[in-house]
Length: 273
Image (cartoon, rainbow, N blue to C red; front, side, top):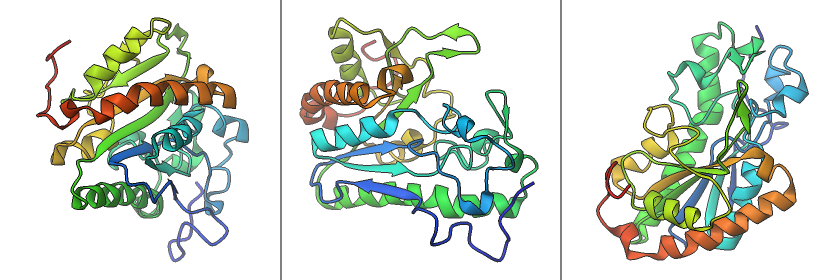
Protein backbone atom coordinates (compact mmCIF):
# COMPACT_ATOMS: atom_id res chain seq x y z
CA UNK A 1 0.00 0.00 0.00
CA UNK A 2 1.41 3.37 -1.05
CA UNK A 3 1.21 6.18 1.49
CA UNK A 4 3.08 9.45 1.82
CA UNK A 5 5.54 9.58 4.75
CA UNK A 6 3.71 10.90 7.78
CA UNK A 7 6.36 13.53 8.53
CA UNK A 8 5.99 15.24 5.14
CA UNK A 9 3.01 17.02 3.59
CA UNK A 10 1.07 15.16 0.93
CA UNK A 11 1.54 17.97 -1.58
CA UNK A 12 4.91 19.46 -2.49
CA UNK A 13 5.97 22.43 -4.59
CA UNK A 14 5.99 20.09 -7.59
CA UNK A 15 2.26 19.38 -7.22
CA UNK A 16 -0.49 21.70 -8.45
CA UNK A 17 -2.58 23.58 -5.91
CA UNK A 18 -5.62 21.62 -4.73
CA UNK A 19 -8.18 24.22 -5.78
CA UNK A 20 -8.69 26.11 -9.04
CA UNK A 21 -10.55 29.42 -8.88
CA UNK A 22 -11.95 31.05 -12.01
CA UNK A 23 -13.14 34.65 -12.33
CA UNK A 24 -12.36 35.57 -8.70
CA UNK A 25 -13.10 39.27 -9.32
CA UNK A 26 -16.72 38.53 -10.26
CA UNK A 27 -19.34 40.57 -8.43
CA UNK A 28 -22.06 38.03 -9.24
CA UNK A 29 -23.86 36.22 -6.40
CA UNK A 30 -23.64 33.01 -8.43
CA UNK A 31 -21.01 30.48 -7.40
CA UNK A 32 -20.26 27.57 -9.72
CA UNK A 33 -18.55 24.51 -8.28
CA UNK A 34 -17.15 21.37 -9.88
CA UNK A 35 -16.43 18.57 -7.39
CA UNK A 36 -14.83 16.18 -9.89
CA UNK A 37 -13.10 18.60 -12.27
CA UNK A 38 -9.58 17.16 -12.24
CA UNK A 39 -7.81 13.81 -12.30
CA UNK A 40 -4.36 14.68 -10.96
CA UNK A 41 -2.63 12.48 -8.38
CA UNK A 42 -0.12 13.83 -5.82
CA UNK A 43 3.41 12.76 -6.69
CA UNK A 44 3.75 11.17 -3.27
CA UNK A 45 1.01 8.69 -4.20
CA UNK A 46 2.53 7.72 -7.55
CA UNK A 47 0.00 5.81 -9.64
CA UNK A 48 -2.17 4.91 -6.62
CA UNK A 49 -0.52 1.53 -6.37
CA UNK A 50 -0.74 0.54 -10.02
CA UNK A 51 -3.79 2.26 -11.50
CA UNK A 52 -3.17 2.75 -15.26
CA UNK A 53 -3.36 6.30 -16.58
CA UNK A 54 -6.18 5.22 -18.88
CA UNK A 55 -8.29 4.40 -15.83
CA UNK A 56 -7.75 7.88 -14.40
CA UNK A 57 -9.01 9.25 -17.70
CA UNK A 58 -12.25 7.26 -17.37
CA UNK A 59 -15.29 8.42 -15.44
CA UNK A 60 -13.94 6.82 -12.28
CA UNK A 61 -11.09 9.35 -12.21
CA UNK A 62 -13.10 12.51 -12.85
CA UNK A 63 -16.28 13.87 -14.41
CA UNK A 64 -15.44 14.02 -18.11
CA UNK A 65 -16.26 17.41 -19.63
CA UNK A 66 -17.56 18.93 -16.40
CA UNK A 67 -14.62 21.32 -15.94
CA UNK A 68 -14.98 22.68 -19.47
CA UNK A 69 -18.71 23.28 -19.01
CA UNK A 70 -18.04 24.98 -15.67
CA UNK A 71 -15.40 27.24 -17.22
CA UNK A 72 -17.75 28.15 -20.06
CA UNK A 73 -20.55 28.98 -17.65
CA UNK A 74 -18.19 31.06 -15.53
CA UNK A 75 -17.33 33.16 -18.55
CA UNK A 76 -20.86 33.46 -19.93
CA UNK A 77 -22.51 34.24 -16.58
CA UNK A 78 -19.55 36.32 -15.32
CA UNK A 79 -19.59 34.16 -12.20
CA UNK A 80 -16.83 32.81 -10.00
CA UNK A 81 -16.12 29.09 -10.16
CA UNK A 82 -14.30 26.77 -7.77
CA UNK A 83 -12.99 23.48 -9.16
CA UNK A 84 -11.11 20.52 -7.77
CA UNK A 85 -7.77 19.56 -9.30
CA UNK A 86 -7.14 16.05 -7.97
CA UNK A 87 -8.86 12.82 -8.90
CA UNK A 88 -11.89 11.61 -7.02
CA UNK A 89 -9.92 8.37 -6.58
CA UNK A 90 -7.53 10.22 -4.26
CA UNK A 91 -10.42 11.74 -2.32
CA UNK A 92 -13.97 12.37 -3.50
CA UNK A 93 -14.83 15.96 -2.59
CA UNK A 94 -18.55 15.22 -3.01
CA UNK A 95 -18.66 12.61 -0.26
CA UNK A 96 -18.61 12.91 3.49
CA UNK A 97 -15.14 12.13 4.84
CA UNK A 98 -16.53 9.07 6.64
CA UNK A 99 -18.26 7.71 3.53
CA UNK A 100 -16.71 4.41 2.32
CA UNK A 101 -16.69 5.79 -1.24
CA UNK A 102 -14.67 8.84 -0.19
CA UNK A 103 -11.48 6.90 -1.02
CA UNK A 104 -12.72 3.77 -2.80
CA UNK A 105 -10.69 0.58 -2.91
CA UNK A 106 -12.73 -0.49 -5.95
CA UNK A 107 -14.36 1.81 -8.51
CA UNK A 108 -16.55 0.42 -11.32
CA UNK A 109 -14.56 -2.80 -11.29
CA UNK A 110 -11.12 -1.18 -11.13
CA UNK A 111 -9.02 -1.88 -8.00
CA UNK A 112 -7.37 1.16 -6.39
CA UNK A 113 -4.57 -0.48 -4.35
CA UNK A 114 -3.48 2.73 -2.60
CA UNK A 115 -6.96 2.98 -1.08
CA UNK A 116 -7.05 -0.57 0.27
CA UNK A 117 -6.65 -0.61 4.05
CA UNK A 118 -5.60 3.03 4.05
CA UNK A 119 -4.45 4.13 7.49
CA UNK A 120 -6.34 6.79 9.46
CA UNK A 121 -3.30 9.07 9.27
CA UNK A 122 -3.00 8.73 5.49
CA UNK A 123 -6.74 9.30 5.10
CA UNK A 124 -6.51 12.45 7.20
CA UNK A 125 -3.54 13.70 5.18
CA UNK A 126 -5.62 13.54 1.99
CA UNK A 127 -8.54 15.30 3.64
CA UNK A 128 -6.28 18.05 4.99
CA UNK A 129 -4.46 18.57 1.69
CA UNK A 130 -7.33 18.28 -0.80
CA UNK A 131 -10.83 17.98 0.64
CA UNK A 132 -10.79 20.70 3.28
CA UNK A 133 -9.14 23.42 1.13
CA UNK A 134 -11.80 22.91 -1.54
CA UNK A 135 -14.71 23.19 0.85
CA UNK A 136 -13.08 26.04 2.76
CA UNK A 137 -12.81 27.93 -0.53
CA UNK A 138 -16.52 27.38 -1.20
CA UNK A 139 -17.49 28.48 2.31
CA UNK A 140 -15.30 31.57 2.09
CA UNK A 141 -16.77 32.61 -1.25
CA UNK A 142 -20.36 32.15 -0.06
CA UNK A 143 -19.59 34.15 3.08
CA UNK A 144 -18.04 36.96 1.04
CA UNK A 145 -21.12 37.16 -1.19
CA UNK A 146 -23.40 37.32 1.84
CA UNK A 147 -21.25 39.96 3.52
CA UNK A 148 -21.61 41.98 0.33
CA UNK A 149 -25.35 42.09 0.94
CA UNK A 150 -26.40 39.58 -1.72
CA UNK A 151 -27.89 36.11 -1.50
CA UNK A 152 -25.56 33.50 -3.00
CA UNK A 153 -26.74 30.86 -5.44
CA UNK A 154 -24.77 27.61 -5.70
CA UNK A 155 -24.69 25.65 -8.97
CA UNK A 156 -22.78 22.36 -9.01
CA UNK A 157 -21.70 20.80 -12.33
CA UNK A 158 -21.20 17.05 -12.81
CA UNK A 159 -21.29 14.53 -15.66
CA UNK A 160 -22.43 10.92 -15.92
CA UNK A 161 -21.75 7.93 -18.16
CA UNK A 162 -24.16 7.03 -21.01
CA UNK A 163 -24.40 3.49 -19.61
CA UNK A 164 -23.81 1.96 -16.20
CA UNK A 165 -23.48 -1.78 -15.61
CA UNK A 166 -24.96 -2.44 -19.03
CA UNK A 167 -28.02 -0.23 -18.57
CA UNK A 168 -28.50 2.70 -20.95
CA UNK A 169 -29.20 6.10 -19.45
CA UNK A 170 -31.56 8.02 -21.72
CA UNK A 171 -31.24 11.42 -20.08
CA UNK A 172 -29.19 14.16 -21.67
CA UNK A 173 -29.13 16.11 -18.42
CA UNK A 174 -30.39 15.62 -14.89
CA UNK A 175 -31.44 18.24 -12.35
CA UNK A 176 -30.62 17.10 -8.83
CA UNK A 177 -32.05 18.74 -5.74
CA UNK A 178 -32.90 17.85 -2.18
CA UNK A 179 -35.20 20.13 -0.19
CA UNK A 180 -35.04 23.46 -2.00
CA UNK A 181 -36.72 23.72 -5.40
CA UNK A 182 -36.45 27.48 -5.91
CA UNK A 183 -33.94 27.05 -8.71
CA UNK A 184 -34.33 23.36 -9.55
CA UNK A 185 -38.04 23.43 -10.42
CA UNK A 186 -37.93 26.36 -12.87
CA UNK A 187 -34.73 24.96 -14.38
CA UNK A 188 -36.42 21.61 -14.91
CA UNK A 189 -39.27 23.38 -16.69
CA UNK A 190 -36.90 25.46 -18.82
CA UNK A 191 -34.84 22.45 -19.87
CA UNK A 192 -37.92 20.40 -20.75
CA UNK A 193 -39.27 23.31 -22.79
CA UNK A 194 -36.21 23.02 -25.04
CA UNK A 195 -37.96 20.08 -26.69
CA UNK A 196 -34.86 18.32 -28.01
CA UNK A 197 -33.47 16.74 -24.84
CA UNK A 198 -34.50 14.18 -22.23
CA UNK A 199 -34.37 15.76 -18.77
CA UNK A 200 -34.19 13.83 -15.50
CA UNK A 201 -35.63 15.01 -12.19
CA UNK A 202 -33.17 13.57 -9.66
CA UNK A 203 -31.94 11.21 -12.40
CA UNK A 204 -29.63 9.41 -13.03
CA UNK A 205 -28.85 10.04 -9.37
CA UNK A 206 -30.91 11.53 -6.58
CA UNK A 207 -29.74 14.30 -4.28
CA UNK A 208 -32.04 12.87 -1.61
CA UNK A 209 -29.99 9.78 -0.84
CA UNK A 210 -27.60 11.65 1.46
CA UNK A 211 -24.63 10.65 -0.72
CA UNK A 212 -23.88 14.07 -2.21
CA UNK A 213 -21.96 16.35 0.12
CA UNK A 214 -21.46 19.75 -1.51
CA UNK A 215 -25.02 20.83 -2.28
CA UNK A 216 -26.20 19.57 1.13
CA UNK A 217 -23.37 20.80 3.33
CA UNK A 218 -23.04 24.34 1.99
CA UNK A 219 -26.48 25.70 0.95
CA UNK A 220 -28.95 24.03 3.26
CA UNK A 221 -27.68 25.28 6.65
CA UNK A 222 -27.81 28.89 5.44
CA UNK A 223 -30.93 28.57 3.29
CA UNK A 224 -29.51 29.59 -0.08
CA UNK A 225 -30.79 28.31 -3.46
CA UNK A 226 -28.80 25.55 -5.08
CA UNK A 227 -28.94 22.95 -7.81
CA UNK A 228 -26.73 20.14 -9.06
CA UNK A 229 -26.57 19.42 -12.78
CA UNK A 230 -25.55 16.06 -14.26
CA UNK A 231 -24.75 16.18 -18.00
CA UNK A 232 -24.19 13.01 -20.02
CA UNK A 233 -20.50 12.66 -20.73
CA UNK A 234 -20.69 11.79 -24.41
CA UNK A 235 -22.37 15.16 -25.02
CA UNK A 236 -19.53 17.19 -23.47
CA UNK A 237 -16.46 15.01 -24.02
CA UNK A 238 -14.98 17.44 -26.56
CA UNK A 239 -14.65 21.22 -26.67
CA UNK A 240 -17.50 21.65 -29.14
CA UNK A 241 -19.98 19.73 -27.01
CA UNK A 242 -18.87 21.39 -23.78
CA UNK A 243 -19.21 24.83 -25.36
CA UNK A 244 -22.66 24.00 -26.70
CA UNK A 245 -23.90 22.86 -23.31
CA UNK A 246 -22.26 25.79 -21.56
CA UNK A 247 -24.11 28.09 -23.93
CA UNK A 248 -27.43 26.31 -23.47
CA UNK A 249 -27.20 26.31 -19.68
CA UNK A 250 -26.09 29.95 -19.53
CA UNK A 251 -29.03 30.96 -21.72
CA UNK A 252 -31.49 29.15 -19.47
CA UNK A 253 -29.89 29.86 -16.10
CA UNK A 254 -29.36 33.59 -16.64
CA UNK A 255 -33.03 34.65 -16.42
CA UNK A 256 -33.79 32.15 -13.65
CA UNK A 257 -30.94 33.34 -11.47
CA UNK A 258 -32.18 36.92 -11.80
CA UNK A 259 -35.78 36.02 -10.94
CA UNK A 260 -37.26 37.19 -7.61
CA UNK A 261 -38.43 33.64 -6.93
CA UNK A 262 -34.85 32.60 -6.27
CA UNK A 263 -34.98 34.79 -3.17
CA UNK A 264 -38.37 33.44 -2.08
CA UNK A 265 -38.80 30.90 0.74
CA UNK A 266 -37.66 27.39 -0.20
CA UNK A 267 -40.01 25.06 -2.07
CA UNK A 268 -39.94 21.61 -0.54
CA UNK A 269 -40.06 18.26 -2.37
CA UNK A 270 -43.45 17.68 -3.93
CA UNK A 271 -44.21 21.37 -4.33
CA UNK A 272 -44.97 22.00 -7.96
CA UNK A 273 -43.84 18.69 -9.50
